[in-house]
Image 1 (tube, one colour):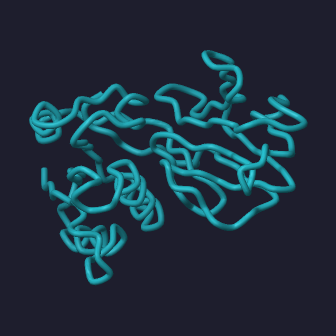
Image 2 (cartoon, one colour):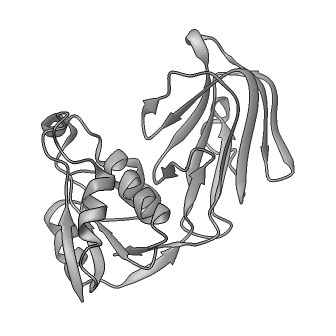
Length: 213
């Protein structure tokens, strides 16, 4: 097995981004595993789950989802909770010797991978006006504070709920789609600036391989 460690550096404009780091890693023809080990957000300005999602997205675009991913988060994150992963030193030991399993890969229309948590929200601190479907089942129609979306470890791969239903209220499927007049998308805690008419998170046709489940 050939493995490489990837982590963000200072987050300045001159630093190589995740896509470049993956390009460099794939130059090794024997590469079988990438260990994603980001430091805390306070050191780099990049949330650990954001960095992981961009690494997985880069592998997806290269059609190299055969490469295993081990995630060594510095602390608990939405992604570690979704997949039941360890953090810190305990995670590193498992990352180097653990076995990978195939898990559903959730992405959106912009080829952004979701590993932890997303929301569909309204622009300008307004409520979201629109409707949401999980597969063919309507989840919401009207206005709400937010639609929450998570990948799942098991089939069918993704789930969504109306935020006011906390706790519970999840509906699982292969896709969560929202259409609205003032829709913003939040991925891994980062909110996009552009209002869109529609956003879909759905299961990619190829799974990714995650170590340490």
